[in-house]
Length: 53
Image (cartoon, rainbow, N blue to C red):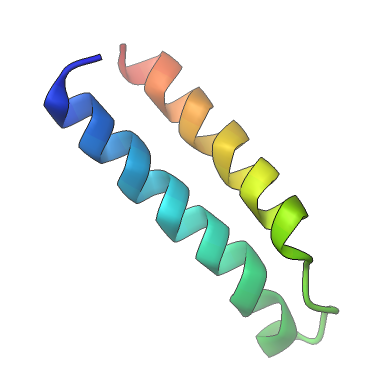
């Protein structure tokens, strides 16, 4: 994994994790626990990395 791929992975992970955690209550859903948000962030970042690799 090159440096640019690592930056892309980390930024995607951070954005997705925070979005899942904090956007839910804004649209009337219960707040997602950190564990679930992190797991979902890793899945989405992994898919993005696999597509880009």
